[in-house]
Amino acid sequence: MDAYPELLDKEDSLLLLVDVQQTMLANCVAPDRVRQNASILIDIARILTIPIILTEQNPRKLGTFLPELTAKSPNPVVFSKNQFGCFENGAIRQAIAATGRKTIILAGIEAHICIFQTGIGGIQLGYRVHVAADAVSASSQMNLDIGLGRLRRAGAAISSMEMAIFELLKKADTEEFRNVLPHIKKIAR
Picture 1 (tube, rainbow, N blue to C red):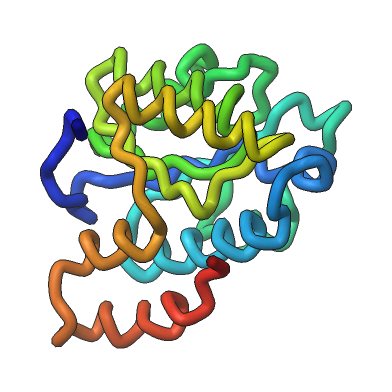
Picture 2 (cartoon, rainbow, N blue to C red; picture 1 turned 60 degrees about the vertical axis):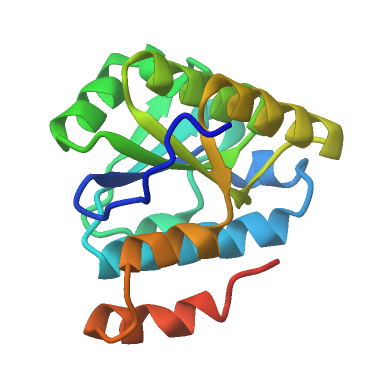
């Protein structure tokens, strides 16, 4: 059962994209889906003026956050980390808190490591964690399933990008909806 049955609210949400790096993507299930959907999440967040936080795991060894995604982010700040859970990094934890938002839309890699530990850390600190499962991957389907399953049991909301986007929009007769619609049609399934 979802610990957070409420709908997403764009005024209370932030997008946390974790470790979308080429070296990591190359070893994941459905890397093209994750790349495409992470790009769309950034577009949606920009349109809806949702803060975006990007992280990269040990960039000296694993490379940087995908440059094409960083370039799409308004005023991008990419936080480098060696911790698996983002909340174990003081700078990331402070950046998230500074937004004043209490709902984290979480995506990236890997589901059973950094996504899982970040989601658990957020839940323990009182954040609502909403995982856009079609923008998450792992080194194997089994690890992807296990990571998302444990997050669900811990109280994270696990859904799809399309579900999250329509919750954020709330209705169709707006300029935001018209601006978001072309991006929804590009979601990799």
